[in-house]
Image (cartoon, rainbow, N blue to C red; front, side, top):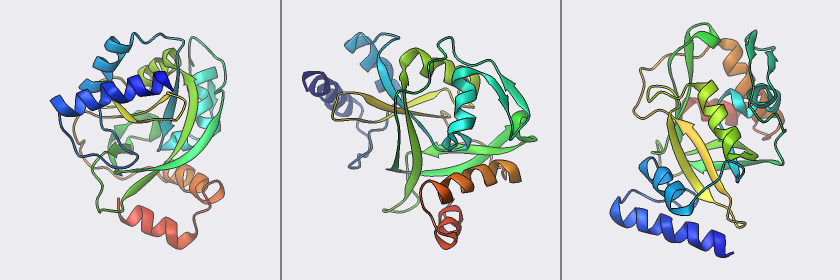
Length: 212
């Protein structure tokens, strides 16, 4: 509890010096995560939640970033993390915001990939995410493999701090990228997870992607 309170105190300070719109489950953060790390004295072995919203909604696909290996969906081999320990826990949640498809990813036939935008398209806008409990070191390795430049996934966003004091992070770009439609296999991977694991109906899926 003390750890969580300290995180919240820091986040409150960050909001005071760098105010941004807040939602019930949402705390946007770029500069703030760096400052929070410095003030908190975070260690590589600290547990964090990584929230995936694109192809990383698939647990088997995300496992390539941790344990390494061949991704069936795109035919690419991944080196994995320096710590191949599987996620300690996995859960699902929706966060305020929106996603769009952009850039040209060589991993997905030079088609667009998903990027998270903290600003929702509507008051009720949300993004479905799968949370993986990993270490901070593993999170950095995921960012490196995703592409840590500002034009890819170099922006670390703190979505919230859970009731055990563990921060929830996701990755996105620093600024909005050029729009580009996703590869059919990439989109099918996302829709498959949303249908089978999140329980979205065909009409709900259509509405979800219609708002992108």
